[in-house]
Amino acid sequence: MYIPSGIAELHLHLYGCFTPEDLYQRGCELRGEIPRWDWFQQEYTAACGKSPTHYWTHPQGQKKLAEEILLHAPASFAQFQSRFNLSIALFPALDPSTTRIALRRAESQGIAYGEFRMVIPPHFTEPQGKELLTLLGETFLACTHATFTPKLLISLPGFSLSLTERHYRWIQETRITSPALNQVLVGLDFCGDEESQPPLEKEAFFRQLHEDNHASSRSLLACYHVGECFSQIGMDNSIRRIWQTHSLGVHRLSHASALGIPPAAMAHLPIQETATERSQHLRFLLEEYEWLHGAGMEYDLDAAQKELHVLEAQSHRTPNIHLPSVQELENTQCLQQAILRKLREAEACIESCPRSNFILSGIENLTDHPLRELAKSGIRLVIASDDPGIFDTSYIEEEAFCRNELGLSEDTLQRFREEAQHQRIPTCNGVTSVKLK
Ligand SMILES: [Zn+2]
Image 1 (cartoon, rainbow, N blue to C red):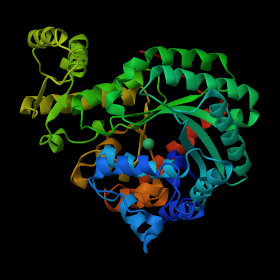
Image 2: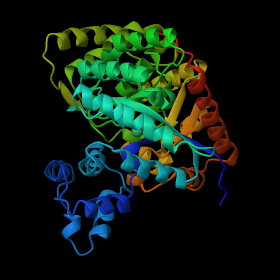
Image 3: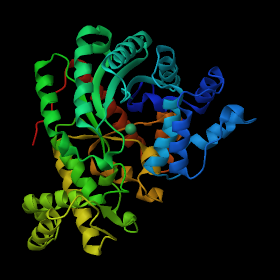
């Protein structure tokens, strides 16, 4: 197997790097007294329909843990999150020694440059949050050496704008007091349950970020999970959100699977969305009619306007559940192509996580995998393993998956590698912000 030297991997979650072995070991050290076991058990049971084994009192605990935590087959985001929660339950706050375990895992998989995302736990107070940031900065710096450069992105809690703003302030203040954090921190990220969080809610936040970046000698990248799952919003809404996220001035779009999945592959899934979400999409269709119609979309402006009036009189609730019509599917395809073209022209970059995208996007066949279409489109792309500890993968295995399961060529894989090397450059010297639309 070809093993590239000096892998640059730009989309990893620190908590997602722990392997079943690491998690089991940690539980043994705690003698089975897991700090947040009840919470983990409750969430896991709700998402997976069965209670997890208490691995440390089971004769084959480590094997059971691997069986119940690793994800190899299609699953919902809630099922993924409930597995990820075990890392949080075992390591409620990452202390330096456990951060080192996660970084060493990545280093042992051949990563020379890695960008790791981490959240500040929502219940943390300001002193706790700032202490965590300082410790992460120091640990990342201590783990940096000639052949391994770990960099940090802080994932902001997109579900609460006030908490996002608070964490952002802590980050900026701690960058001043902690030279180590300032050196290793390269950006911010939004992750979690993206479907309940319309990106345009963060417009004011992004304006502030861009202003701060212009005034700073070390700008922060902005990455954003979008277009990854479609259980609560339709594909066309998801594609619109990708475009709107880009318009916020995001530097890299995380996943954006909705741009590459053939709409027909999702035709069996009922569209189910709130009145608010549907209204936002109708407003977009009305405002952008000229170029969307030019791109081949066929829809009736009067009908859209009437539907919008009806929805605006309603409360925030689910208006209907319906299967997309043939015309809707055709429009979704036109919208995909139109947005892809615009993003390519704007030199936007997508972080695609091949196994993770297969498991979480709702597709059933690899022939519908979004990366096949995205790679063909010529848009800038990097690949990454997302949560290698849960998806049981590594960058090298992601490449093998692309080669063997998706039929991507060596040239294409080389293009991904070169793009990743290229993407890491601006993080060292200050980012050129994408202009707001
Ligand atoms: Zn991710």
